[in-house]
Structures are given as C-alpha cells and as structure tokens.
Image 1 (cartoon, rainbow, N blue to C red):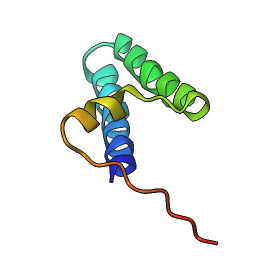
Image 2 (cartoon, rainbow, N blue to C red):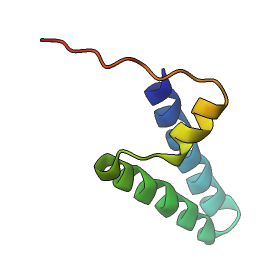
Image 3 (tube, rainbow, N blue to C red):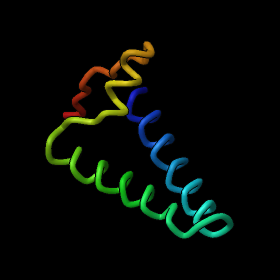
Image 4 (cartoon, rainbow, N blue to C red):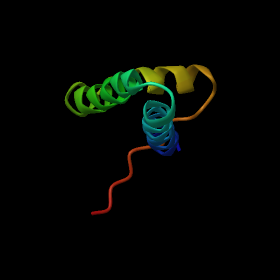
Amino acid sequence: MMNRFIRAIAGAFIVISVVLAIYVNINWLWFTVFVGVNLFQSAFTQWCLMEKILFKLGVKKEADRRTD
C-alpha cells in the first residue's frame, strides 16, 4: 500500500506543479525537478522522505512478496 501512496502523491505533485507552471509562474517547474530528483535518488539509496512521512501517519509497509 505504501508504494501506491508514494506513486500517487508523486504523480499528483508533478501534475499540479506543471499546471501551476503553465497558469501561474514557470518557476513551479523547479518543484517538478525536485520531485523527479527525489524519485531518482530513492531508486539508488532506498530512502524516501515521503515514505517516512506516510509511515508516521500510519500507512503500513507491504511485506516483500516473492513470485518465484
């Protein structure tokens, strides 16, 4: 469940920041870059701030499932 929340929040942040860049100010694209860089670094470091925030809010981490 945690991964679904993280993907949904990241996707929403990106869409919202692009819409804000189009209609409000182009500098909102820096927020899109911030989200993208965080997604990229979490692929290598296995650390995600949003995961920590969601865990403190009570969202459970899913168990590692093997499909062997």
